[in-house]
Image 1: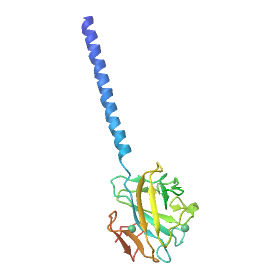
Image 2 (image 1 turned 60 degrees about the vertical axis):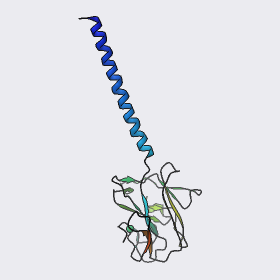
Image 3 (image 1 turned 120 degrees about the vertical axis):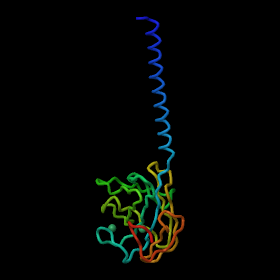
Image 4 (image 1 turned 120 degrees about the horizontal axis):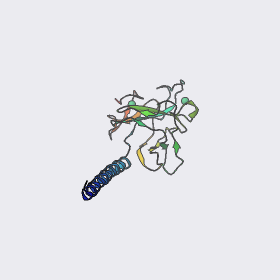
Length: 184
Ligand SMILES: [Ca+2]
Ligand SMILES: [Ca+2]
């Protein structure tokens, strides 16, 4: 066999392998970039800061709560994200859960109880909502990126404050709160 032919063939094969690797790498790089540049889309969708008789938690306790809504096409797990009433204050890290209880399905909802009773489950936060109003921030796992925030004024008992419709900029008072269900 011709030595030159073998050499050329070898170079061609190597070039092809190199090109494939480069292409693959650049595609992976694009994927990585897209992952890091895409902000998680979740809404603080509804809240009840004074729960007298509205809706009890799993233990029958009438605690404050707020609801998250996932408008996207993918399920989102919120373990490791943070909540706070001010990014300058201490951030509360949402703990891990043994089940998939902290995963919000696509177009789904998750109620987070603000009862300072984290021993009752990962969906029970070490914070309360002030009846006279305050802020809520949901912050990504990097502890910096604000996913969503809301400010609310003085609240009345058993009347929730929420986006209408789900995920909209418009906020309304609801005499019939809908924790874990569409706002209406
Ligand atoms: Ca509770
Ligand atoms: Ca709702």
